[in-house]
Length: 374
Image (cartoon, rainbow, N blue to C red; front, top):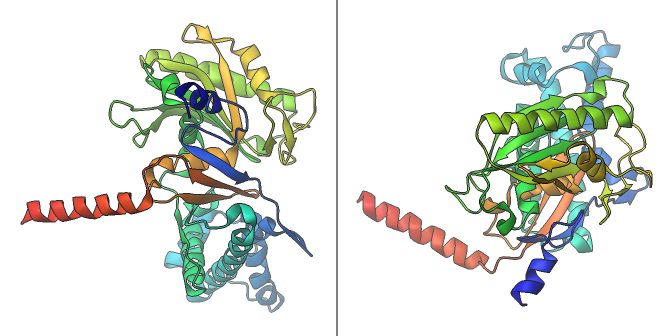
């Protein structure tokens, strides 16, 4: 492939299948059974339903060790505390819910792995808000054990970054390296069914060209799920957040790439429209008359003295891309994000740096380190 052709295939395009370093084999995969969408059985809401299932018979006996608070209102921090320091019976209820949820998560992943788009997946990264808690991490760990016990040749582990930051950091991988050259940072947006987060991602290219050292240096969060808001109010609030971050970057003396990277739920069309999957967002985001990247460009026409560009992809894809520098030992890998729904994406690395070579190099470096110690 000529350099011109390769550059053309990796120019920023909304919802692109071919990105600078990976091919997006699949995202927003929807597998159904007799009960509906399989992924719904492993959402954070599913965990709350399972917790309620364990509490109900105890409540009927007047002995619910978790008290009177509804299951969907108990905070993750409280559940974590019950696991660590609670009475044995209360901890037992939470542990039972974790076990049942882990069984459900493993079942969902088995179904995904049987799909054509997910075949030969070697590694599954788990992100989203739920695994950021202790109980979520335990559930993921237990699901990993279940998959290994089944003899499935796939590894399961948590993403490296905090989910709040991964959904922003991954936006850097939507752009080819030549677009990032000469700039310090970029603006990124992570849109979810409950929260919207916008931030400044310091690319730290002087420390690592592969963006493995990228970090969020400023961010704003709006929990829109707590409010009755229209789509127009969301856009007004979001563009206001971005305008404030542009000013913040200037104060920090960071040169911004004139591009806003966006992660958004749903099936993203090449023109920036959302074809399906945005039902958890306020208002109709799937309207043919609505285009989020265009709305952002209209409100923020320039960044760093250049015309603003916006590029959008599915939010699970963007969160997955944050893991790209750390998964070069695998050719085919996936991500699932556990939140309001179960986001998912599958990738194939485009870089020719193969799995065996990476592992060999890793072992050589480890051996060299041991020799140096000796």
